[in-house]
Image (cartoon, rainbow over all chains, first blue to last red; front, side):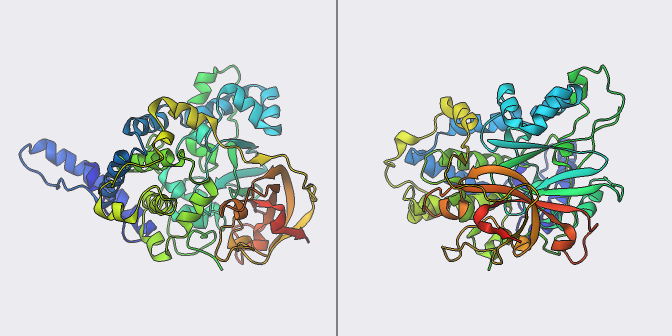
Length: 235
Length: 224
């Protein structure tokens, strides 16, 4: 079914439209397929980029330059091991321990290394805190820089041309598309990741968390809130 | 002046479409494309600045018709051919012509964890002093271009060229992409987070007190 993601040819925003529509369509197709076992309402021809990737992997493997099992391991790492739960763990600690919070805002790197959250695309982390006065959000207008060891692989919208082009110019409008509306007195700070510094947003702590266990706090912290595009879940 | 990737501030892109939080890869080939790119990076034939530049050098026509991971693949194949790891003929034929002499550098499954957790820090101890301090008003250079290589790599986006802001953070010295992308050495120099008022960047900002903050190298800046 993944092979039906084939329409990426009409510009990025249109592609995202097609994408969303394609997803809906795929769900419909799966349902239809389940109902009519003998009929195939979609075709099995793989998409062009899927075939290109396959071809490149085959050539590189035969050249002895890559090992497909290493690729499996990379995918498994980012699919199952490194993701926003790491960042949420850090945020939960900052919410519940004021010394940790102060040290994190001062220099996050030694603390993160101690927690084991270090590595590719997270060598230099700066934590910034959202308050009533300042709302931080992160973008990379030139490519897609993102704190991988803390948040995993960036979501598609973060890598989209729409997010990259608009966030620096109209952050409040972009936030509204995530359902976030900020009061006028809150200053929005957009961090454009133009170097190897990666920014982690510490979202505003909800009231009434006193005495809550770290695990329960982690469940409140969304990925988007640590990019500064969403809010945490309410208690 | 600039290339297709330098899109900050551009009009016309339409709404951002948030998606479910648990989606990591929208399709399997995206995951495969990412993994192939990382595995090839581990061969040590290029650095991250060169790989960004390879994607940026795609013709604008291709850059805009490609999806995100197609841009990655196109940049990757350019680098594989330019560095002699593959030939254009092999890519066209879809067949390997003889083994590579780089097979001893191949990333094996057992080394993946080390490779991903080791990272590649870019901070350096250098003698070049940081000349700006917190709060200094600084102005970015007028040209969002590489000053030494025509059409070369730079990390000064065009929307912030020639703008005045203030130093918010000092990050120490970091490898300079403008040099490193072109094999001209790391040329590390002080890096700063510089804050710009929205009203100094845009004709119609959402709110004039909002700020945009960029990480900028010392050679991109002069005292305002």
